[in-house]
Length: 333
Image (cartoon, rainbow, N blue to C red; front, side):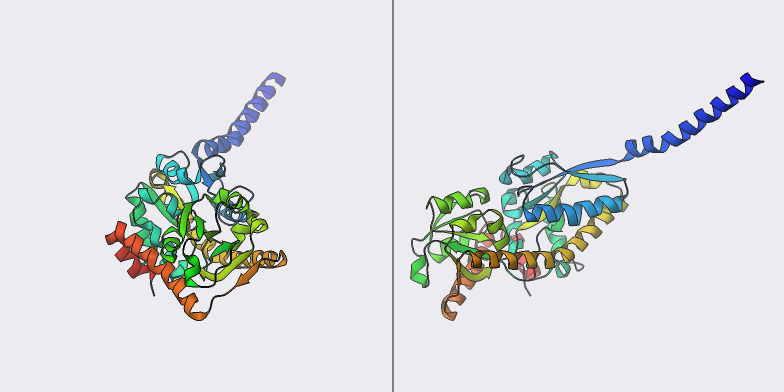
């Protein structure tokens, strides 16, 4: 009798253990794991906010059905290699500037010239859907803006003050990709400089100025330490976007696709106040460091800004006429 009771007890325990462990094995077997990388270092405020306000929030909402892991910044995958890394599936997702991978999705560089909010771009038939279409042709999925704003916020940083149009002639301006056409149109002598090299280029006097960088990024790079002046006439919006490998996207069940889009749209809305606050803090830090923010006279200011936009649109039009014409229609009020 005792042996029979012991056998029944062991059977019950085995059954309970089997039932108790089965769900965890199913979750592990079915959970989707994806990886993302950033064009900026892990310590940058933009990367931190992207992880906290988009990736972490999405992972929490997904409740274990999928998890997106951070795999590194430019020390792992170079900025200009990040788009191709997503396309090839080395990572599933990236926070990256469109200028770094435009060859994969021709025409998307015009995204920085938008006059709309992300919410306006997402209206049915809007710019969001056309940008997605352009990305799809290159094996990519466009999820939306990674550093949106209400107003333009690219600035020009100098160690040699300029106040007149003629002062730009021969001025040595360094830039990554976005501000190159504008810098040439202003009359400057232009050199390609990676974001990670902004500090050293200014410190070593390799350039007189750097064009096309937000204040908060400039401060996060500590480049304000080697800066004397800032032209206080911003232009363009962020070129940073979120992209996915198209195959990774297509393999996701519909509910997770919808959740990604929903969470990304929420991020685009929620991050704007944080960006504006961080931008103002960066400005104040630079002012405290005795950096001079100054404005041009109205005629010079008009020339400076209008030249920046015309040069960028003309550059895009010369390379991608069909896509640029469509984007200009969709991105302009």
